[in-house]
Amino acid sequence: MVAKNHGQQEVEAPTSQLQAIFWTGRQRFIFSYYVFYGILDVALLGLVSWNLHKHGNTWTNYPDGMYYHALGLGLFTTIFTLLFTIFHWALGHLLLTLTFFASGVFFGTVAGILTSTPFGHGLQCKNPVESFPPKYQPFYHDCRKVTATVGLAWALFALSVLGFFFMLQDKYSCVSKRNHVYIEYVAPEPKKHDEEEA
Image (cartoon, rainbow, N blue to C red; front, side, top):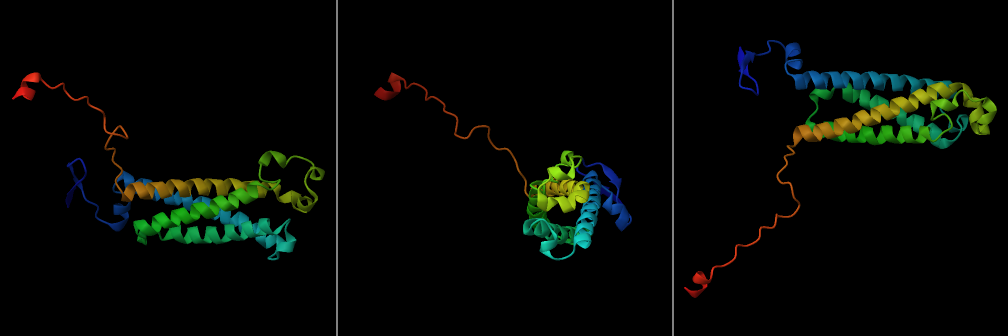
């Protein structure tokens, strides 16, 4: 079977569903994007799950309630986006766009809250335990893992924002129509005295 691509060149059409996934550069890009997104999501799911499993499901086992709830939101978001990543091929543009938007908000919230902790920057992990606030000292040995969690959450936030704008661009055509906000001023031609007399 022969099909025409955008350049109107005749190319061989895909003969299987698997071949159809990798038929165009756009499809290869989208497939690679979701594979990378899924890998980062599974890594973050592992770190958040490990942290929640180690310290328990009571907020008093953590430095404060905000830290605990950020981990809970991270757990929900990673499971949500893992399902979204696996089944993205069956979803429409509108649902994909909204899901990327929601994921960006959730991952940004998790990353922002955990960045505000003393473990939010990896350069602080080599400091002695006494340099941390007392409520964070029992969690000193988790510093590197929390830093990795923050980094993955920021990366997934960025990928979600990029995915959101890609879906908008893919769905709607953004075409430049003009170079000026206002209509350019064109001076009227001077009137001739002959036309006024007639």
